[in-house]
Image 1 (cartoon, rainbow over the protein chains, first blue to last red):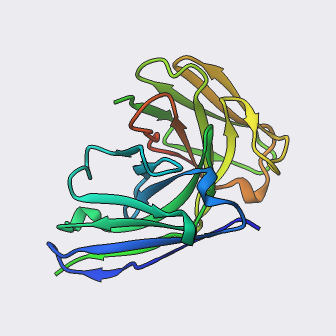
Image 2 (image 1 turned 60 degrees about the vertical axis):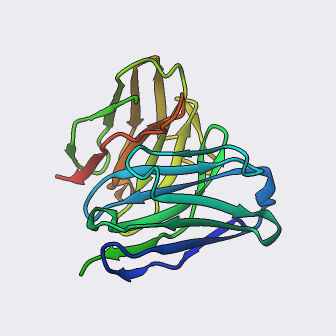
Length: 117
Length: 107
């Protein structure tokens, strides 16, 4: 069974940093690109970042480029998203997804990040 | 950046009704479009990819059509579990943007 489980969310103050993790099981993570998608409170879905199978190709949305860093450890079946200089507008649920060429076919349950002083 | 505009914002229907949701791209995305369903409090679920191919386990009442800039998701006869928010997303280039969503609610 394919499972993606995010962790590392929580309440943080503006300007602080945070690292989200996504533990993957049920498929060889090294065979798939992986993405992060976020959703602000009461808002729609926003694609954040993508990392290729080997980590050689990385893409970010304009809204997070320069503050977010995606990485992966295929040996540990784990995906990461490091966020610097957190802003209130970064508040939301962060989803880890499997990027199956044509669509995001599996999603985690999400990790809630709340940025507030 | 390709902008996806979904319409209507909200669709008020009853079980058994047909739902027709639209997604229009600001430039051609060929057939590189997917549809997702998000029920309240849940993660999104893939419904349709490549504009018209149903994902594994998705009931036949869901169908997608279109190419280029105009796409449609049709639910032929709404079941109670279909009342949710639906998003389109393109995969033509970077960034992989989503539409703003269409909420299908009970009348």
